[in-house]
Image (cartoon, rainbow, N blue to C red; front, side, top):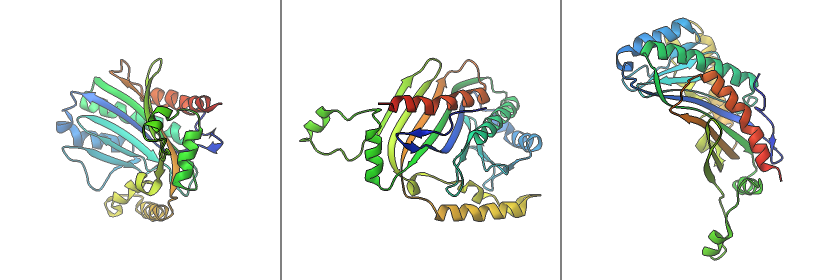
Length: 270
């Protein structure tokens, strides 16, 4: 069970908006020879996956899960899996991340076997947490009030003690067994977040089954995109290992996710 997916930070609810798992590989050029066979294997062994309408190419092979609208891409350089919360639904929760971790594990096993992948240059799990705000000014004030970081007085004084309008920050911290890149910034959601529009690229008439369900989901996506909120503060955390000795996607996702919010909560305690 994954715990710590949702909690309060700085007095506001942390909404898990989106997660991405990425695995970069070395010598993955067998993709050029085996892409179609790999896609067929994925869809045969994991029937929830369908090829998106733009289809596979020499650059990338994108697939969509009919189970939870997860999007999976793989190429000669990397593979990545992502899922995003719809604005009219609950935030991504523990069960969502557990299913996501299982999908990453299963897809990695198939792709690594089909393409003969043995060496990997980076494994990463990234999560975007948003915190509802009434305005752009509110988001910046909340971020600066967390106490995680400060804008130095020397910087302000160099500009005649001018007011700080935006306090965005990005920092990389070296942990015990992985690194963490953490970014704080205010966002206008319409400009930053996709809200699951990947399913719009699937042509229902090309699917042997579930055509009606896909049509209904596509209409729901269009409604979500029309209902997007406007302002939020965002904390973006990316846990990663370079040149990993062991690649275990499910374990890496679950152990990373367990650490994110408790560490942030500890950083904001003041």
